[in-house]
Amino acid sequence: MNARLDDRPTATTFDVESLVTRVWTGQIRVPHFQRDFRWSREDVRRLFDSIVKGYPVGSLLLWEREAPEQRLHLGALHIEALEMANARWVVDGQQRITSLANALHESGQSDPRFALSYDVVKRDFTASTAGGEATLIPLPVIFDLHKILKWFAEHPEISEHLDHTTAITKRIRQFPIPAYEVKQDNPEVLQIIFDRMNNYGKRLSRAEVFSALYAGDESKQADTLTIGRVAEHVNSERQFGVIDDDTLLRAILARRGPDVTRDIHHEFDDSHRKTNEFPGEDRDSAYRRSEESLLRAVEFLQDELGVPHIALLPYRFLLVVLTRLFAHHPEIDDRNRVLLRRWFWRVAVVGPYIFRGSATGAMKALTYRISPNSLSDSIQGLLSVVERSEYGSPDITRFRTNEGAGKIIMCSWWSMRPRDLITGEVLEQNKLAEALGEKTTAAPVIPFIVSPRAVPEPLKQSAANRIMLASESLPLNELDSLLSRDPVDMDEDAWRAVLHSHSLTPEVASLVARGEIEGFLVERQTLIQDNLNQFLEAMCEWSFEDTPPLGDLIIDDEDAEEIIDAVD
Image 1: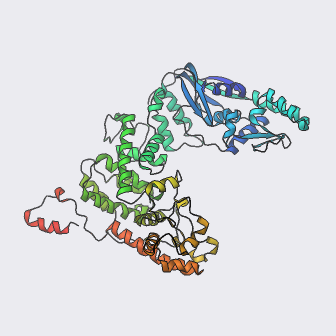
Image 2 (image 1 turned 180 degrees about the vertical axis):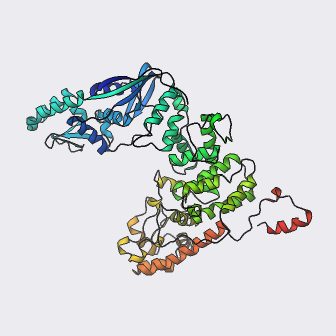
Image 3 (image 1 turned 90 degrees about the horizontal axis):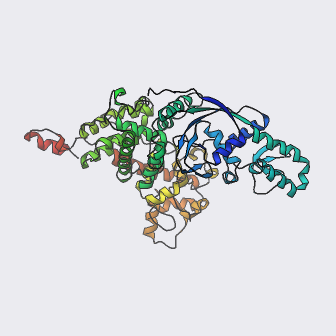
């Protein structure tokens, strides 16, 4: 990227009143590649506190260029913006501009991040309330002198604060914010400036920088794939949950080359790439084909590996590796699918620890094993990285829903097709996804059976006190009673099937009814461990030969029978 700035930026100053008016009318816009709004309500409150105290709040960098007619979404605001030749696009200052425009507009009060009021007694900014206290004046009222006068006319009991309040109004409206304006037709310049400015101080994530560098045509943003939209599409198609941006970026990079840590600044410039497995591929094609590969990888995870949702995926680097494999080898035969299943669960059990304890190191060690030209070599290469030996099962006495070991345990529970304790219905994947929503862990569907306060210390962290459920009708604080009941709507066999799906038996469940909590948890630990061992034995198949498909072997006739016997 050799683009340069033709004209020096011009310095100007906006007062808050003119700045937010320009935002509300669509004259100031935020490019679609900018990071999401990240400030909390406290950050917004501090901004206004700085304004009324006269503290500097930093300068803005705006890019002057044409803008299409479009419906803008900025925080809680929806703006019908007209086409214009000289709009200002925000390069630096998005968080401040979004905060000011929302907090000072009536529509912004619907969003807790921007719902602020000024306490005329304490002389401080605070969260708005629904109580309608006279002394708490919402910022959209504070910002408008006519509304202030009306407020005090309706609340004469606080008239002594009128002069102070109108002074606050004046300070906010007239507060000066310096800005630099850049006039340049080349969008590449904007992206370079954005990249460099946001790589100093509080750094952007690598995915955010990548999105900025390769934002695509601003005028076609409605139809342009982004990392966020790829995540939405995969979730919509497979109900897998929302894949985080950094994992998605690594998947996009891994598809195009094995080194996921490479410099991203020349990703689509073939002259700067040492290894380019898709020469000539442009940005839009890369996003589209990466999404296709991700969908194949997720489908394989759900349908054949027993990982129904990203919240149960032991390690996210495994999804990156699968994406690369399915990108180069979209059609995988039955034998190699069996071998791929073994590889996945073997790596999941050993975790990143055999790769010097680093998930990034594990990812690179595995992505480099995938050959674009040979599926068999790729599968055999992946298998060769994991030593052929038995590794201990995850520790069920120390269960965490956000750790790899805990996710393996939960996958073993999922394999048992857990059933509803009232209806006996099997928990389906769509119900699991609905219950988890956009949660990053499976905690919402893994409640405690017995209150942790009633559990002896050695068993407080045990998986034996957790259960997989996703039903709005179940009273979660009564799970111990539900397990110990004699159901009237199920026959004995049906109830046994329900209990079995949760690593329970009627005899073990009855311990809860008798108040024998420690005995219940100890017995259930044994059942969970047995089921976990069976699950991992079936998935990992450590003792089996990892012979490739017969079609990939060149053998003599006399060796054929021996090879066939070795294939399992």
